[in-house]
Length: 236
Ligand SMILES: *Cc1c(COP(=O)(O)O)cnc(C)c1O
Image (cartoon, rainbow, N blue to C red):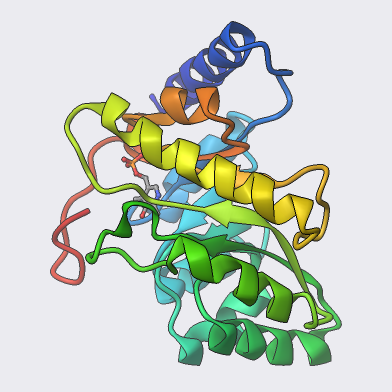
């Protein structure tokens, strides 16, 4: 089932890219494996999937070791500073950097590892008080400070729009993120200003996100199925 879902998704992603005149290799699929077992990740890897998204660092760490490090993780959850060390060690990208304090912690842990780490700044589009991420007008300042941290490469922006039943309602938030990234890249605030990453779009709205310029789509349910709610996290 996982294999079929991944194949179907890759087809739909290409279809959407074709429809809006984008090259087929401009979007990467992040398979969100949170709360699914390591065996599900293995199954997806056998179907050719390379990139996975996790939102609890302890869970990601357990899976990382079960897979003997043979997995590429993007961290997509709220990262507490006291978990920055593990995140720096096991992730290839942190998509949810939302403060200079966290960025500095990550950088400090990366120095002895001599590892550079890709990051995205999480933006609170729509000013949703329930979501973490920083206000759009604060992103420039944060990127300016992050650019002084030698071990971090700020590749772009990430957002989780407020939940709505109709995926088309997310479009304006995706547009907002793209416009913000364009003005920040004019100021040369990213690591590569000709190729800025935009992580936006989940199972129900990834096609709209791709139409609006997403380069990373984070998809869980449409690959692995419905997650069982845990007490830690009732809402997702
Ligand atoms: C869980 C999660 C996703 C995946 O959501 P689905 O609707 O299952 O595709 C994407 N992004 C973030 C930040 C998440 O926490």
